[in-house]
Length: 229
Image (cartoon, rainbow, N blue to C red; front, side):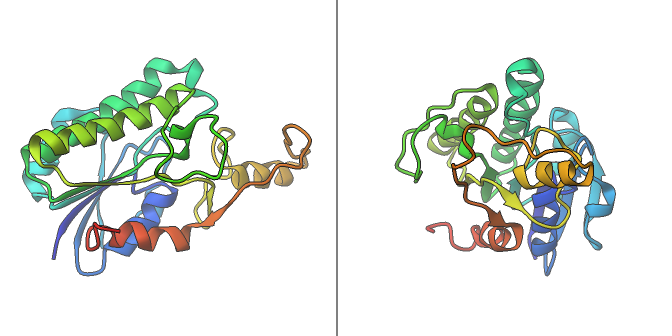
């Protein structure tokens, strides 16, 4: 049985991941509830309401549970809003992540799993793959890519093993439809419920790929067992 930390585990993707990991493991969810809900936390999972921007709270958790794996999903994922909340964006999405990486190094975590974002590619032409050079164009993408670079540095200097996922347009149960800045499906659903016209950019002929949360989460959960994939 492994001790596992899931940050952002009261949110959309994080709550599904916490449930997937809870079978046979000791799972701790850390969430400040700025975008998540206690009702999303699965039964049998230990919940701690705290922020990743609080290094003392993080240190107490790592000392208490001796985590073997960290799945870091907590973020303020408002890409379009990020240029107008730069300090808040970097404090939550970059400095908060560094607090976790520092703790993972100190406590010799076996693997750090980070959910980055397709925003690291900026305005590059799709289709994207891991060989594309990231070139983020907004503070949200910059913060995500900076965390990726810091993980690479922590691996080189301290041997911290890590895995990075760059999800995009995930949809499914427990999606926050009231959020005006995140997830296209949720925004469209909220507009339909309110009888508002759907927000369409450009000519409306562009296409997007969407992934169901139940198809994405199993791969994230299993990556610590198959790091080479």
